[in-house]
Image 1 (tube, rainbow over the protein chains, first blue to last red):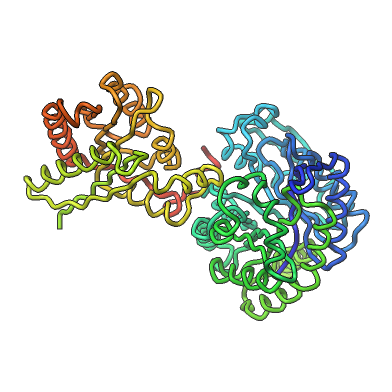
Image 2: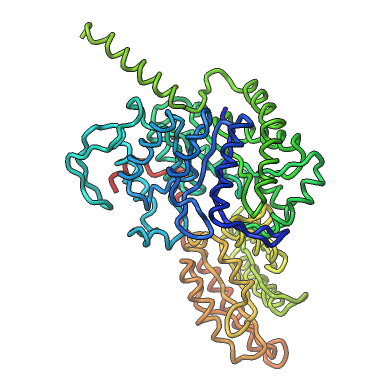
Length: 370
Length: 200
């Protein structure tokens, strides 16, 4: 099982001090968080992509490449890559390039983006969101898998004799997760291709998340990629920890009360009951996270949101220390002990390359008998 | 066995409120109308005021709390609705609208609805026709032709005029119950196959 952090990249005022970091400081802070994530032994760093204030990360591959140059183990991912408003050709090129620079430590999570005005800024219409995700991703897959592509679709100018360069590292395209909060069509898409499905459940009740994941698992089996419990599932989490529960609640409450998305709404206690938000001791975070498995089955990737709502970098880095030292080692052990042998781990570049090699060897062995 | 479930959504703010008073009389009339036809009924009364915080939270977070979810399911699962709003600033109240804003926009499709409103003066009575009726038309519900508006005077000197309107509207709601309510297809139980999405 993989553990990691994902960041939205919001620039939000710290409600306890009234200070707001600059865009430059926030970008550098995200890099520090990624480096810290590797240092404390996490497996994944994922960042969002946004094209409107108050968010900074419009160019994820620039930032991820900068991080790749300073790390050696951590997988670099996205949360999410906008499959609707980006040109799939540019996604194919950018992430293949990143794959080479990062020696294969790259995967992506596709998302549609829910901000209406962003679509027209990129020549699209949010009402076509699902269709854009379906068509653009179908093209992206071909660009990574076929050396020369002829293609014509509804949303992008046609391609004739096009080769996306560089070709994916070792001819193995990056693994793709599809993220969606509430669209069954995206769970269906992930299942159809046998890709991963990530439900960013951090703002949602379990009943809702369960419907989406159950649908994905059931359709994964329907499309013949394996049994439902072998589907590749990822989940979010939102935590804030201190040694004593009460200290965590006291320190986090002003950030919660003023946070974008849910601030000025439900109480921290109500929201913690309804969603995965866990503010408390490391032990409470361990117990809550282990309980996800009881609702959603064995899963492959757990990402935590650690750095939003104006939390200062110093605090976030302390949180990562606690996560890496006290929480994740226990979770790794507990989850591994519970996971049946037939449930796979999340694919990595190495495992996908080995699988491709095995498929190639099988073909070579079978050929003479034909 | 043939029991009909009537959900009553009333958005009065005071306790007791004239909206609640009207809601009770409408519910009683519908119950009588049904029992006159040998049909049992269960009245589910919802005071929107009791869920005001949860409604705000739902707007902010995008999902209902467990207790609000139960209330919303009562409404979407009912055979018919009676809705009552006080008239505020020449329209339904904001709290009344919030209740219907957090419902899925297909959730009331095909459902018979009795529209009712209260106000301080008769001069607001067309609020039923220019505010409530378009809202329920948008939601693809089936509002019955007679709406019931009660002004302050309807509880005193004009009470004799209110009674026949209540009976008329209740009769129309019960008659509308014979309509077959279309059942929406559940995209989780019946997902669109991906080949169809690819080819659409």
